[in-house]
Image (cartoon, rainbow, N blue to C red; front, side):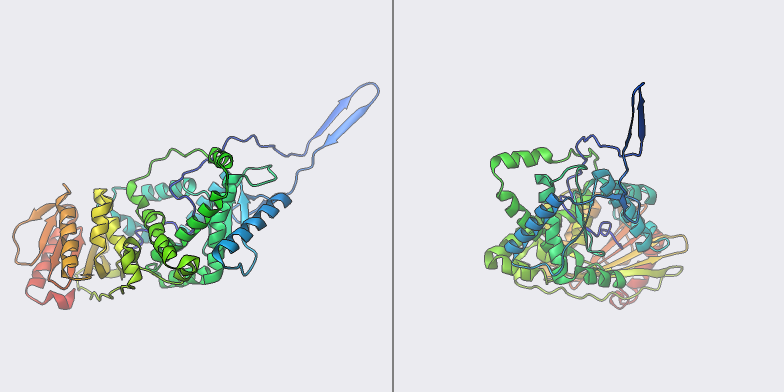
Length: 461
């Protein structure tokens, strides 16, 4: 199950907006000598190429003009006034052409990809998605898809690690246009949040622990506040400026990606703002600032009442299984977003998936692998109460029964339901926990279930 949703860790503006730069004729600076001769005179003109500043991947970083710097400072003042917070240091930034920004986004993503995934880990992550019925992509195909997504999806970003704001602008302009200023407001708000909370340290702690379970809830609050400040800035535009800004939106990429890829972003940009609005209505911007320090669960983002009641996440212990030929390769906690990702990703229906997920008490999972790379995945889930636990079980049974790839297996001396196919799935509910197993080897799964039937499974799993 590992790393279902951690493909993009930088904060992105308008994640759903795949952008391309408007057609702009660029002036190519070169060193040339032109000589014109007549019988009376000779004229020589020399154009000197300005030295380019490049980032670590070779993309050109554009200079901020004095007029842009003045606009930048005005936006900083606007954000400080609206949030009531102060920048502790001047924001770090890099400006690119759109193509340069896209090239940087891809290069940095691939660089982080090599760092973030150990040998064989990406292949297991993709195999896990295949076994959950989310896609049929190969590892190379899915990697290429996310490279395309990274290239096209972002209008600007704030990097959690190096604390640099990056936005694309048009070359050879003295001032930011209205659209670029709107993007800057959003990303400068993230920069301010990063300074107030020290997001860089938080990110590196998650990375060191290889546990990003706290990422989704906090990001949802942060995106909601950035969207709010951005909307406040845009509300100061008159109707003419609004039309002008709309005309400055770059054209779309025209690339269709599978719907399930966007499920985490529905949490950040859809459900997060709904919760943030209630937080703001209850206590103003100060309350929203305070919420930035919290680490809400995905369930608390999907259902605001659970945020305000501070409903705790239940720690669920899942023990190791002894499986011949398999070794434990990874483990982690289960969040409501995981349930929505699985259930909505296969069915395409958001509301039933969210309804089931908003009853999660807690959960844990363990992945086992054999020498061929085959996966055997175990999950253990608690509910807020028995009704919610039953609803989670029913949602997963509906999930299995709706797929042609599964056929329910009738027989066996074990509890629960078994569905077999190229991937096999077992689920049981004992009133305390819902337990699930996914395996590529259905005979092995039957053996494990048979062994459990003659011993207390609760002690093993």
